[in-house]
Image (cartoon, rainbow, N blue to C red; front, top):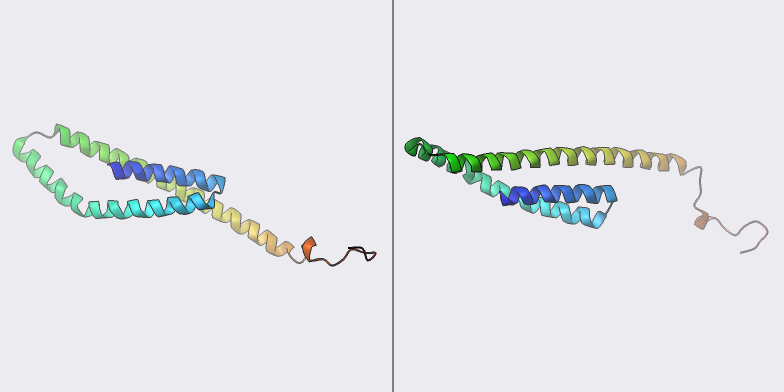
Length: 127
């Protein structure tokens, strides 16, 4: 549960950094997200087994209130992370399209405009 909450915060932070074009923060956030996803994947491997044990315990004892509440909280956290991930992915796709459009414009304008730093001495021989 804590990893899901931390991943949600990392996604929010990464989205904010992307909007601000804070490259350093974007790199840090991506690294943090990768670490968290790795930890969550390792926990997911045992989650199915644990859920089967819970289900067997509930069936045997007829008591599942606390476990049901925990399962609901985890499901809510997973849904939030999924939604944040979808929003972040959409922002990245739109940003990529915008950057590609800007690069295409710069490429097409390159023959038309010359960098003033590359131009020699101005007319009249003055430097």
